[in-house]
Length: 400
Image 1 (tube, one colour):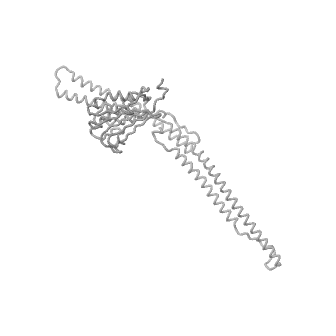
Image 2: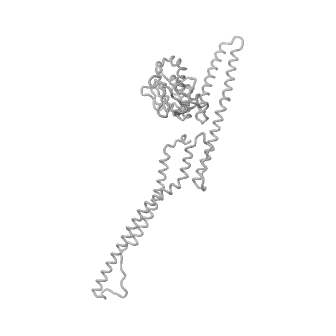
Image 3: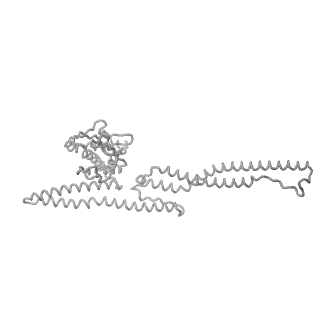
């Protein structure tokens, strides 16, 4: 779930608020200590004045005695000044030590205060669509942090119910929505199969209705794939899949369509290389490859070109489909992976959702369902480069 929420700088923010708490604690302590030191300095720093001896008056004592008294008063004043200086110096040294200690204590206290928040953040980060049943269950007294944890738990409960409702819809929609379409198609076929001549107008309308039903079924199939991939429905028939062979099959099936547009299909160079294995749903991965190639064929110039390559880089597998075509802007490319977004009215029906505005949306959703990504980039010479990155299957699984 955290990946869905997108929190790339949590640790920096957490350290930042901890430092702010520490600075606040230390600042308040130092301000209080400085104020106390100023008061001590003002009280103790007054000029020392010796009280006159009882019964003595100026001029009543001999000059030698007066000189001796003055000398003693001067020595006492100097001793007082030294004591004040030592007091201030000791207080300043103590202030420095206590300032450093206050930073350490403030850091520890801030960590203690923020510990439940860090625990909630870590627990939330590891939640996903498949673990929404888990709860934070924050322990401790009923304070603000406990209230925050309870609020997040209530939100998770609502999200779990929403995801469950979406899964039920995806599970039921295929049968519930395809059945009326099948009934309509059967009715049209029965009408055409009746004995006797069928009026040409009726036959034309029947073919038109059949074509529209095909479009609706294609759109429905694309929507179901998109919903299943986006809403955390468990991947069907998960297995080891050779992405290179799967992509080659998709290219072979579309060879006639590409030839009709006089497109040059390039699989040389890196090409559809051997041994590119991933773990996932063969059905969904095939739909992903179909949509990428359909998109490259549909939105290409007659006599253009398509380049398809699969390769392995470290622990990742990449499927790259490039095609020539008109120049695209960054804003246009950013819209391509959104459902029902088309760049031109020329986009017409394709068997895998290309003409419904769902083609690349399905690719992105399937890639995400397999823990991968789809990257779309406009080529400077015109056309589009689509790169799907998936996790490579473990060598032990492939060997087995």
